[in-house]
Image 1 (tube, rainbow, N blue to C red):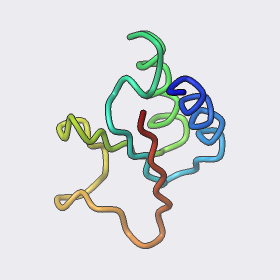
Image 2 (image 1 turned 135 degrees about the horizontal axis):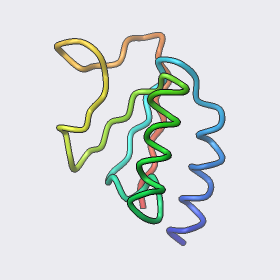
Image 3 (image 1 turned 30 degrees about the vertical axis):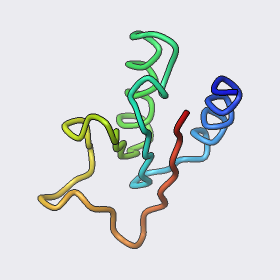
Image 4 (image 1 turned 90 degrees about the vertical axis):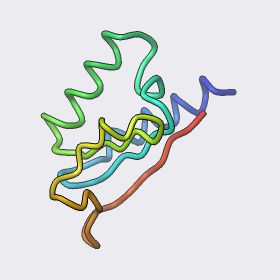
Length: 81
Protein backbone atom coordinates (compact mmCIF):
# COMPACT_ATOMS: atom_id res chain seq x y z
CA UNK A 1 0.00 0.00 0.00
CA UNK A 2 1.13 3.60 -0.46
CA UNK A 3 1.23 4.13 3.32
CA UNK A 4 3.51 1.13 3.92
CA UNK A 5 5.84 2.33 1.14
CA UNK A 6 5.92 5.79 2.71
CA UNK A 7 6.77 4.31 6.12
CA UNK A 8 9.58 2.29 4.52
CA UNK A 9 10.97 5.49 2.97
CA UNK A 10 10.73 7.31 6.28
CA UNK A 11 12.76 4.54 7.97
CA UNK A 12 15.41 5.03 5.27
CA UNK A 13 15.55 8.79 5.85
CA UNK A 14 17.27 8.15 9.15
CA UNK A 15 20.26 6.80 7.18
CA UNK A 16 20.72 9.87 4.99
CA UNK A 17 23.83 11.92 5.49
CA UNK A 18 25.34 15.14 4.16
CA UNK A 19 25.27 15.46 0.33
CA UNK A 20 22.95 12.45 -0.20
CA UNK A 21 20.08 13.01 -2.65
CA UNK A 22 16.47 12.00 -1.99
CA UNK A 23 14.32 11.79 -5.12
CA UNK A 24 10.54 11.80 -4.63
CA UNK A 25 7.85 11.73 -7.27
CA UNK A 26 5.70 14.28 -5.46
CA UNK A 27 6.12 16.57 -2.45
CA UNK A 28 3.28 14.80 -0.64
CA UNK A 29 5.56 11.76 -0.24
CA UNK A 30 7.37 13.62 2.55
CA UNK A 31 4.44 13.76 4.96
CA UNK A 32 0.74 13.52 5.71
CA UNK A 33 0.01 17.23 5.88
CA UNK A 34 1.65 20.61 5.29
CA UNK A 35 3.28 20.81 8.73
CA UNK A 36 4.65 17.26 8.47
CA UNK A 37 6.10 17.95 5.00
CA UNK A 38 7.75 21.18 6.17
CA UNK A 39 9.22 19.44 9.22
CA UNK A 40 10.62 16.53 7.16
CA UNK A 41 12.03 18.96 4.58
CA UNK A 42 13.73 20.98 7.33
CA UNK A 43 15.18 17.90 9.03
CA UNK A 44 16.56 16.50 5.81
CA UNK A 45 17.91 19.69 4.25
CA UNK A 46 18.97 21.78 7.26
CA UNK A 47 19.88 19.20 9.90
CA UNK A 48 21.32 16.46 7.69
CA UNK A 49 22.43 18.40 4.60
CA UNK A 50 20.47 16.11 2.26
CA UNK A 51 19.41 17.38 -1.16
CA UNK A 52 15.83 16.74 -2.28
CA UNK A 53 14.60 16.40 -5.85
CA UNK A 54 10.82 16.54 -6.37
CA UNK A 55 10.14 15.14 -9.85
CA UNK A 56 6.79 16.86 -10.41
CA UNK A 57 8.05 20.21 -9.02
CA UNK A 58 11.56 20.85 -10.42
CA UNK A 59 11.71 24.29 -8.78
CA UNK A 60 12.08 22.51 -5.42
CA UNK A 61 15.34 20.82 -6.47
CA UNK A 62 17.82 21.65 -3.69
CA UNK A 63 20.96 20.26 -5.31
CA UNK A 64 23.84 22.71 -5.34
CA UNK A 65 25.50 24.18 -8.42
CA UNK A 66 24.38 25.45 -11.80
CA UNK A 67 23.81 22.01 -13.33
CA UNK A 68 21.99 20.58 -10.31
CA UNK A 69 23.32 17.08 -10.80
CA UNK A 70 24.62 14.82 -8.04
CA UNK A 71 28.32 14.03 -8.04
CA UNK A 72 29.74 10.53 -7.83
CA UNK A 73 30.16 10.78 -4.05
CA UNK A 74 26.41 11.21 -3.47
CA UNK A 75 23.97 8.41 -2.73
CA UNK A 76 20.57 8.73 -4.37
CA UNK A 77 17.37 7.12 -3.12
CA UNK A 78 13.94 7.34 -4.66
CA UNK A 79 10.52 7.17 -3.05
CA UNK A 80 7.27 7.15 -5.00
CA UNK A 81 3.71 6.07 -4.37
